[in-house]
Amino acid sequence: MGALWALSPIVFLGLVVNLAVLFTAIISVYYLFLNLRLAVIMIVTTLLFFGSFILIEQQNLPLLYISIFIFLIAWIGQFYGHKVEGKKPSFLTDLTYLFIGPLWVVEKLLGRKEKNKK
Image 1 (cartoon, rainbow, N blue to C red):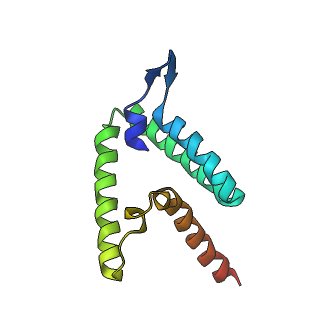
Image 2: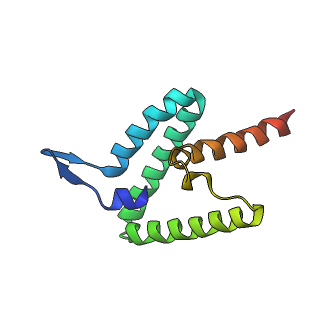
């Protein structure tokens, strides 16, 4: 999302479009159909990310390079985790899992917290 934000705005059909906001709007509609509670959590989280992007840009830091670095480290960690558990990443066979993955993580984190409360 940071890279999309950094590469924006673009002019598309005469409109100025921020790619990160456009992608978030599209994926949020999809999330709303899957689960309202998790969709709201994802939207709020994404808005917090957008706020951090603005702060990074205000400090004249290279958001694009920071985002690429975080992306690479996260993917290395993800593939290492899949190797450790001995499972192939699901999104390699079905791209839907690429979009559902963040919801799955949020659901697991919330599930653990709710279990700890009981």
